[in-house]
Length: 224
Picture: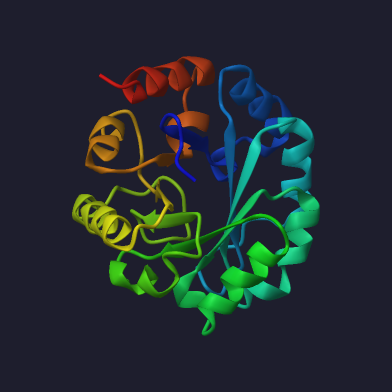
């Protein structure tokens, strides 16, 4: 799943839900091809976000955008079908949230969409090795999951380097996605370190001028 260029994936968790459709369309009209959906259950993480109905509304507003659905929930296998029906093109489950990670990954792939694994800041990166050849994406949490607008954890750069090494050693083809505290100040360094996909919530939807902020990211993400 090698991208032809770095990917910016705005997270609708930070959007104004009274203007959700309009804000998603602002993104897609300004070159955004991925939309990130953060699903929280109030148990695996200390917050509740939204479910398949909002993902479906996002799909309706986003037209052909690639819906990247991040399940921060226990028992993710119970909900995979519902999120696929809602429009998910890729579903990521947390390694910490299921005792049968390989089965969860295979369940997603058997449904005909792409599969990812997310890991929290304190989870060893090597946790993903057993499924490295079976996944399309690793979501590297750069904050503790549960809330938007948190400060980026600087040790993430070393974790990216370790993931790049695992990918090379295994001959794997997963993308590396960074989720949490991403903004214009660290976007370039994250890409230079080895990230492929940047999830940006508050830094996009919290901007006074969303198209201008997207253009700022796009300028920073262009190859030198």
